[in-house]
Length: 273
Image 1 (cartoon, rainbow, N blue to C red):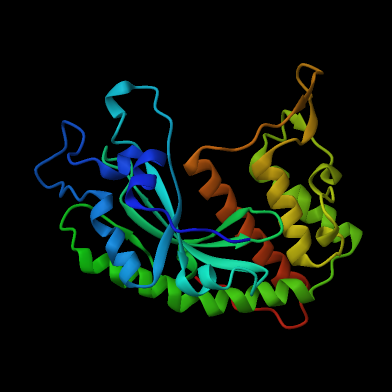
Image 2 (image 1 turned 120 degrees about the vertical axis):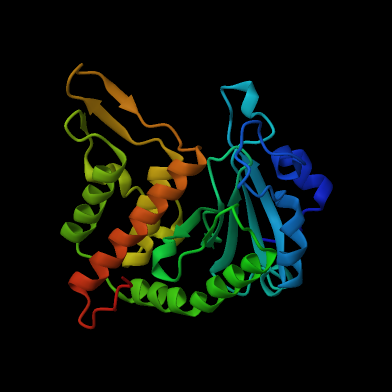
């Protein structure tokens, strides 16, 4: 799937807050305002180009233009060779200008067959949250380097996930763990099979990687059917669109898959502290 890098004008159209020239009113004197657009060329110079941008919805109009926003960057190699791999290793930048977020640089994997973005927990490599106070642009370059250096490690983990075959019991156990992360199980009754639906031919095998992606897609995109045990009503889950919720669930699901790999693999991998 060919993807074209976004120009600054296209980024502005998708997420105007990227180009805010001032922080929200009321920030302290120690808050060093750094417009997100000022670091775009740092990514481009490192060989990563923006391919997607979005921003959080706001209820309070005072936050409009300052809210949390994300930019997804893809390497030049993956842009020029879009079908060379089954997954893309991307970098995601998160920031805001209303004190709700520092600069955060995360590692993300984009699976070609389903278009789902998987965020890898930042604690698995190095802390990459860059506070506005005392901000230095060089820190962004260092964070990009840390993330790219960790990519081979995650790729090795993905290859391990692909080699591990899950039994039906193990598949449902992993799905049940995901249900615990997404829903209030004291209130919502959901069968694990709801998260194991096969949506495409490529998802038909039983590897940990495939089962994990089936579950992740179901959790993020919604459509899971269940029953509210308090009211007796049936419901269908909605897609998760909030930036924070997507990031949190993605990271928790990845950590759960790592734990599963360690429990059932004959050669457990070393989980990062």
